[in-house]
Length: 240
Image 1 (cartoon, rainbow, N blue to C red):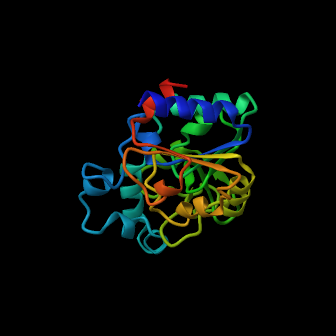
Image 2 (cartoon, rainbow, N blue to C red; image 1 turned 60 degrees about the vertical axis):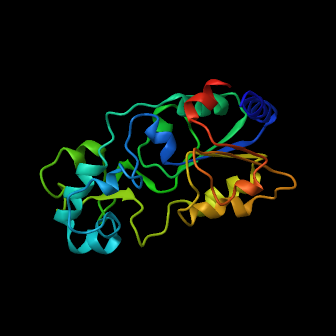
């Protein structure tokens, strides 16, 4: 394991345009429950419909009260704080070595840690808006309200700016350009099973760009990686 961690250190030290791609495994390090594991949020809910159904665009439009009951119960992450992964990525960006981060997480922790160039691919709970005239609302406006959050100006339902099932992720083109421009693409805490985000690996030119995957479980792209580490993220980042 020591040799692998030293290889990771070397790649990070030599990288000049590092791009990080983070998933749920980074959030769980801050104490946020994951979604799809045996003990994850998706398997602990008490609703008759599946989480995928309740978090769909169609369900939001047709059953807003039930949608917000589930959303507020499941995604209120305001109390959580950044961990060593978030703060290290932020420090690397400040040092001019990191292009930024693409995250599948909606918890806003990369921004809270000080990262500036963050593509929140699936949106964030901290951005909410009125579909009628674009007024912006905080996470408090959504999570602390009774029932369905509505715009005080027009009465329209406030829309959380998170990607629901059946919708296109945010800033896909921008994310793709970053992937193509990086010299090291570091995948952290994701199984690379959720599309279209999992396709980012396919945009790499593996003759000129390095791919590093750090995830507890194997992924379908491990065979393509310059370096693959199946270890706890805390341990890996403490080695930097």
